[in-house]
Length: 149
Image 1 (cartoon, rainbow, N blue to C red):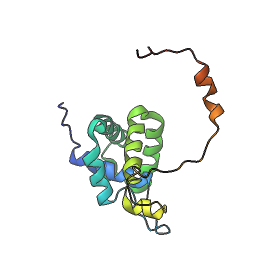
Image 2: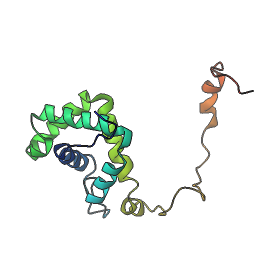
Image 3: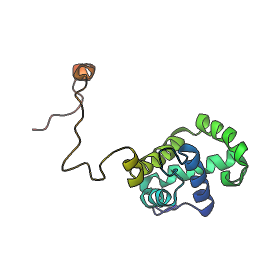
């Protein structure tokens, strides 16, 4: 396989189907689901190095379903997805991460969360101070990297 791997039409259908199961649309919050056309286009355009694990996850889903997940009856999909969650490993985690990252950078979703539509820099975002003592075990470890001259 070349570095320019893309998803097949069946994999794209299954990606849309599983994305809708991960994040369905919400009338209450007036946001689209992760199967929205714009969000799906963002996922496909930015897959990059995640293409292989996402394709592997989608192929695993299809094997569990015995067919394309999109072709499976909606009421049968939940059982397949439960199996997928327990057996999908790192590829499944990558698939979920990709869907979430693209969903939560969509302007409509950010607006519904009350976030300003802008890049995080140069203005930045203020984070509340946390409990810095949580880093004490890390600081107590022996140095494992070479110090720069």
